[in-house]
Image (cartoon, helix red, strand yellow):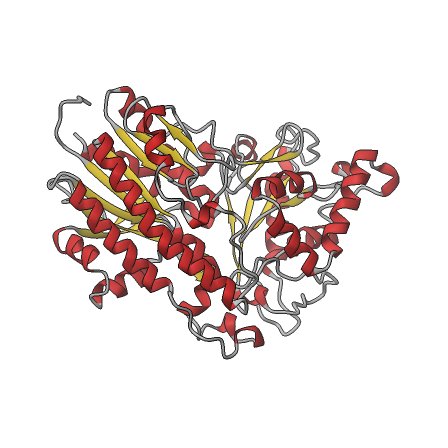
Length: 496
């Protein structure tokens, strides 16, 4: 692609913005900039692999490949070579804009979730300025000549990871969070404008991450009548101000300012890869349930090494610590520190010689990994038995109900058809989609002694679909549904 072309693209991410809410606000004249864009452009549905895991959606967009190729499904990565976990860093991903930059196109990227740094010499790339997802735990800026501009920008309130809330009744904490996000949107918009004016990139991707942060904690304000919130914790809660709509209105205003900063004939793309839906915490019973069903077994105390014993004790202390102590722990320590301390205790001390399948740590879906021989270092399941054990686990999971007979499982996805496919795959073998019944407290599972309650107090979790408003010369002929892995190619074509 030649550098002397005048075509420009600005892509603006409203991370985790729910399509139905955005479209409703557009139709009610609450988002005038997006309404104007839509009147001259097209509305498209975006399909991303959130059905595998929300952690898969941005790597899919960034690389233009699906999760089976890039291997990312969540914030924790499983390493079958040594049966361990590590925090996702994104360093081994090659973004679609690498080729553009190599061919002389000036690129600007601000706070795109899960973004890798490639060391741009022109334009700008800024990671973790005020992120929702923490990778390295500190801001990264390139090229060096724009560092002063970034340093002189007013700080974003979310750059402090101690801005946390304690659930739907923590009205003061939620108010603080919402206000910080509202001010943060304004600060982010001003920084983005300054970067565009200073570097004049042909392609700019600007991400507003504040909607994602608040959506997790105040979704009960968006859908207060949903069955998930029919419990005492949500009774008679006052409405919060600013609310999620106020934040979206401010994003709309900032988008207008960014468009005014760019060339008038620039292609404008506003999109999200997934939205939000009601929840209350995340289910945490799959690991002990697989043990109870006989698919996994814990190593006994005598069979553990001294290190494994220490980790087992540490995990037990964390599980049984008072809630107040846990809150103090997470408030007092930086998130990167809690991640580092958590990593060794994320999995129980399994007896791998007696474990055929196990659960991987998750924030939403259930993830089951088969201990497959030839893939896992300690694998015991032969390739010819792969399909059989997957079907056995799926059948038992689909039969799960509460003590009152409510189904717990909505669907079970197989990510690999054959053992040969699975051996080359880094994603879970089975992905379990739960029903709203898993949020009940106390949760009783029929025929089971497992009593693990949901983890966390967030009230919104990731939903499947995103949206795209596309305004540009290449908008005609676009399909009604855009795949996340194809968006990068669409952006690249819009530059030519």
